[in-house]
Image (tube, rainbow, N blue to C red):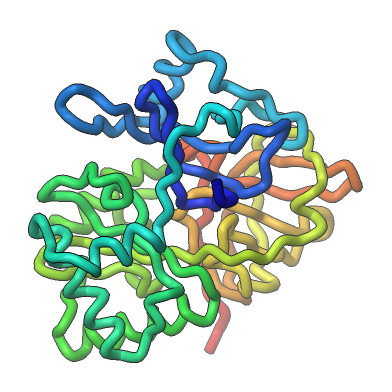
Length: 315
């Protein structure tokens, strides 16, 4: 089996389907999060609470305490994986045959538009419900890019296609739906203000799609172990936003003791720009080297954890 990457899905013999969250295993376990359960009628998507409750009551062997992260996570031992769903392979599969439903047709049409604008589709994959064929008529299209240059190129393409009316901006119902699915702590007005300037989502035929970035870059700090020091809220300035769309999302902070904020939830990708004054609430962690960081996104919904812009620098 090839190495697992974030945005891949892995499936077990019990019909449990986990979304991979990091490519570096711990004690032969792939760290992931339970997203779907296979039933007689198809796939059932699980909320964070449903996923945790199911594992606690019926599959506790998939709960794993990570010593390096100081938290209990979902972890699948390599030997328990019966199928590995890979976004790039799945996209090429769908593009290589006739679509079987309206969502696949829209995915083909969307990627054809990107390709016509010069995008190298070898750097793109499809994740989410489409990756395992669990999509429904109202499902979103979730795309992942594997090179930073390709991701930012795609954002510019989305801008052009919106201007040419070949793609649609999200209407009020799609924005409300996106906000409800995220379940974030920000108000709807705050959420929409931040999202509208990112150009990482739009619609095609009234189906929302969004793009995310996954790069192979690894830093020395990623190999350190961390201990939690409780929840903290601070106001500071973004010193560097170069990795604002990475996974995990990273912001360098202009703060006397806490130099970095990271997030594992897509809600806060591209949330703030260099020079902007922000309010951040998350979990304070200290590394084995003694460095402090603030983590936003201990689960998908991240209740009471957020990043929001308070003020922007003068032009």
